[in-house]
Amino acid sequence: MENTFGMNIIPDNDALRVEALKRYKILDTPPENAFDNVARLATQIFNVPISLVSLVDEDQVYFKANIGMGNARSTSRGVSLCSLSVMQSEVTVFENAPEEPCLLSNPNVAGNFGLKFYAGAPLTTRDGFLIGTLCIIDKTPRTFSGAEREILASLARIVMDEIELRLSAIKEQEKQQEYIEEAAATNEELLTSNEELSRTQENLVSAIARLADLEALKDIAIEQAKLGIWHIDAESQEFVPSIRLKEFFGYYPNEEMSYQVAVSHIREDFRTQVAREVDEAIQTGKSYDLEYPIIMFRSGQLRWVRATGKLNPGEKGREAQYSGTIVDITEQKEDEQRKNDFISMVSHELKTPLTSINGYIQMLAVKAGSSDDSFAVNILNKAARQTRKMRSMINGFLNMKRLETGKIPLDKRVFDMAELVLEAEEESIATISTHKVIFAPVEQTIVLADRDKIGQVINNLISNAVKYSPKGSEIYVACMNIAQTVQVSVGDQGMGVSEADQVKLFDRFYRVETKEMDTIGGFGIGLYLCDEIIKRHNGNIWIESELEKGSTFYFNLPL
Ligand code: ADP
Image 1 (cartoon, rainbow, N blue to C red):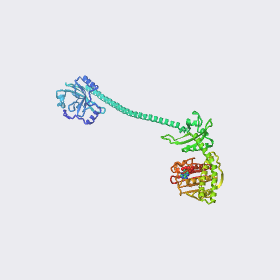
Image 2: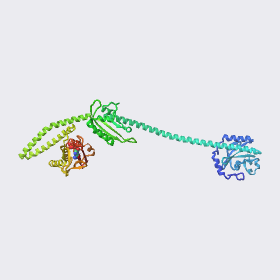
Image 3: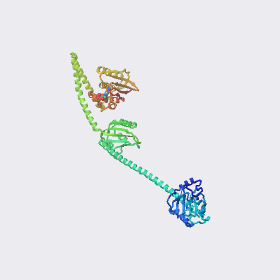
Image 4: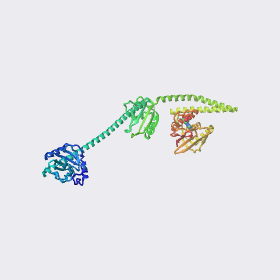
């Protein structure tokens, strides 16, 4: 940097001073009225042609206000007299510049411009840095009194106040800008959230619409299936029946029907059992599937219903809820009834002629035996076996009918199970040649039960084992005492029963539907009868089985 003064013009703290100047963001900015006004005021007060507000930067001196010096906006620091003014805090005055040794080679003084008088009061920041001057210049020499120096210094303070004010305004503006930018960003975010929100809302609306469609479909399905439905309200634990359900029980849609009332309409002979099973299922969260008759309110009409119930697992924070359906099966029951009546009527009618045929066959067999006609004996024995089969089938139907109408009384007597099993063993030795029936030793066990019917159950299980397992395979029969019960088991190495079929095996007319079954005759009432007989003795009957490996049927009787 050039220096025309022949002396040091850079104060010791210049770096900090320049930094302080830059803080005001004023360097190299266009003229502003506030500064022009003070400079103009100075020219008027001191009656000089030129006044400048200068800012002394590292290399340049910028004129923030310039009155009387043309368009000059800046000059080099090494030429400007203001560079000298920022070297001291007092007002710098050259009353007759050409006489000053340090200004001899200054182009402003020595050159065409012809500067003769200069007075500059420094612009002092609050923290004491001299960042520029308010100066006045004349082209004729003049004196400058102490009072005039004071006035110039005061005007310099006004300029400094303006600079501070300007900075506050800039900061305020920046803050506003920041705020506006933040607001704009927030606005942007809001807009995006809004868009997301409206997208979510759209999704929600379409989900609700889909849900409504599904609900409507569900309602149609319920309507078409003529289903009465109910559920237990998760909050109030109240029983909530649908209108159709109320109709089933003979109630109007607007009439109250509590759970207890619904139970009281179940026909008496079914009531306790059904209520117990439903209660138990609800308590344990298990499903149920029951058929029972109800007596309708007011009309007293009988109606058969099939009732199912299940626990719906609560999803997404909702509690699990128990609900159920009821469907009218009166017609189906009546059809079944007619079919049963027909079967039992036919069975009944067949029984007498069959007994006669059996008698005739026996008579013929005796005769053939005495005349040594082995061919006839053989044929007649086969005929006798077939009639026995027919008789047991017919008895089965008749028993079923009697069971259902409660006409099969139990003839309970005290007897020894070991003896009954022994009889079964003797009969199997006499009648079964296709399989190896193995009886485990049985201890004497005295029970109170209907001996014939328990015998029927054992025989039925053994003949099923023969029917449903391959020729030559083994059948195990055991009878033992377990926990206050006597338990009989019949195991085979046959086709077995799938888990799904095991549940329905003891239902009336139920037969497993597989290809192998096509060639094995039967009506599906044997196990149903066994189940009824055992239940009436307060016992249990069940199956353990694995497909293709074999089955074991168990029943027990309380001791
Ligand atoms: P039926 O033998 O006249 O069909 P049941 O009531 O005695 O009727 O048996 C019902 C069904 O149970 C049978 O049709 C058969 O599918 C199955 N079942 C019974 N016993 C056995 C067994 N020991 N092994 C495999 N399946 C069996």
